[in-house]
Length: 170
Image (tube, rainbow, N blue to C red; front, side):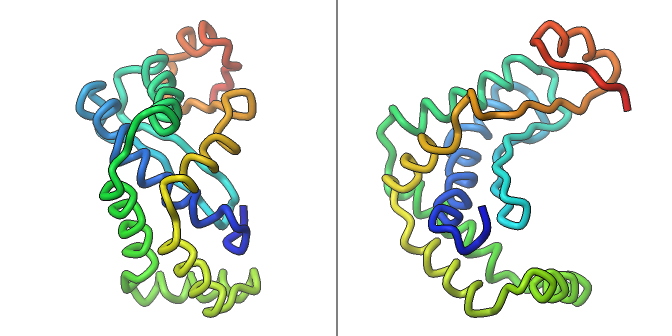
């Protein structure tokens, strides 16, 4: 969803909330991956779960699904929501390199995004609640609406086929 969509801010906060509250522990600490989490890309209107250098496949995909159950069924502290909000605000406010600033300015001009829109998005991020996170999680992160893509080494091909995934060598 584009930055002006009412649910873009909660989706951005949700990515950090799931990453810090559930996915880091499940995928990295317990699962042994070098990293993993979730991201919301407002420019491409996509929400992604990811892991990398991950020794597990099916279990990690299950962890992604379990993170939504965790979001919807567990009791959560406001502090965790606040940390996720601050993470998004930090990424908005951090200074960029000259090249990064030029790239951002180019894409903002290309897509007609104004500094005022960026400020409105920032303000909406600050207003996100736990109920917003649960609502967008329940609305948009449904298993039957998900697409699954695995980019791995050729040795994972059979395991992918066993999971019902189509294998396309690159």
